Amino acid sequence: MKSIYPDIASLLLELEMELRTLELWDAEPPGPEALASTQPFCVDTLTLPQWLQFVFLPRMSQLVEREHPLPQKCGIAPMAEEYFRGLDLPSAGLTRKLIEIDERLERG
Image 1 (cartoon, one colour):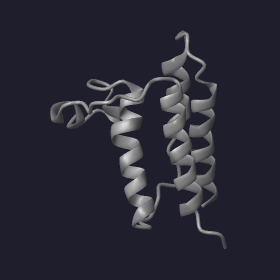
Image 2 (image 1 turned 60 degrees about the vertical axis):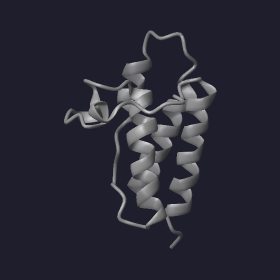
Image 3 (image 1 turned 180 degrees about the vertical axis):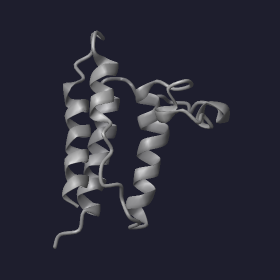
């Protein structure tokens, strides 16, 4: 059986590239108080792209690097679709990457 870790690592890099392409990649991290939010996706302190950059990508990358158990589903794509609805950004590629990550996690 093929290991999931290389696939997820590649998808995470592709997700980062999508964020950078859309110019949604921040040069500076948010303050510690913003990252300490207890709300899902830090909705009260971060934008979705910030959450992806500063929470999701680092946590998933750490799991992959250490080959720790990965979640079986993330379900972030619907939130991304809602977040980008009405914004003048070509976000389909970013949303597709999140769908691909979810699908790969579900397959194990």
